[in-house]
Image (cartoon, rainbow, N blue to C red; front, side):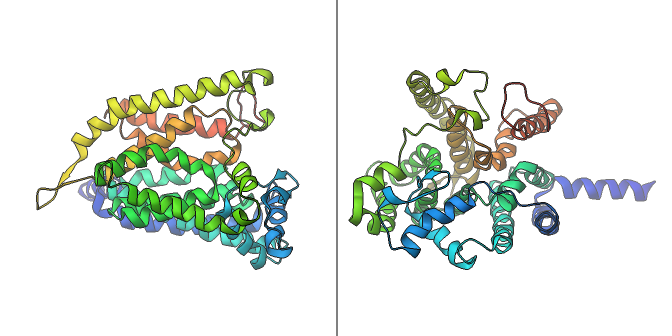
Length: 381
């Protein structure tokens, strides 16, 4: 009986104590490596956007055409910033002009494992995330598919974003701003984190001091875009940062209960924008200011230092506000926030009921994102 009791105590300690976090994370990454390799070898690849990506980057890399208004693929015109072109240009060459799909998939296996490792590191830095919750980061069927079977650029953008968050957690604000801007250059959704990041930079540098990291962010965008700006600067800006773009209604996971006419209306777009601004203001006043008092560190020289838990809470909740108010969420957009949900639920009150609520919430969100095609009455395929 004593032996069983000690075993239970040991297992419980591994599940909840921070000293075992690294060991649990390594075990998870090993399991995920085998799972990802199995998926690539056994589950058929599904063509969605890869061929379009390859057609888009072939313009500058194969034909020397740097006019953004001429770059397009089977799914339409190129609508991503310049960083996407360089990144998928490299993949274009590595995969033999996009033909060698298995090689691309194995590259994405490495990306996925690195992605999870960085997220786990961020969670460890918060010192709020119990080891057992790491496994919640791996339970999404949809996220595995987005990486290994779909090869979406969202995966790269979020990888760079999490790398920047890890740097911010270590007070590497300038290098973090550089990497954050690289993430934006792959896909514009990263700007959903920008309101929270601006608040953190003001905390760290002051209103005028944060001009330096913001200049780094702007400089990265300009530098990467130079070849395209020189040819057609207006075309580049209109295509790569088109904030008024309307996504196709039939592929949107959310707002399926609305008619298509209402979905694409300007009234809905303006209403959601106002709601987003209002929600961010509410977070700033009611949550971020309170969390600052709760999580702020005092260093040895009595200089206030932002706790990693506060940094992560602000950035993740800023992004989540944008997700909640987004007009259109396509399947690949799930990667924008799935790995943040477990941490955000830790900001709830404690208790058994709330612990169960975390699991129920994650399960419900996963069910909705696995409905195909999108509809207003979700059920598993």
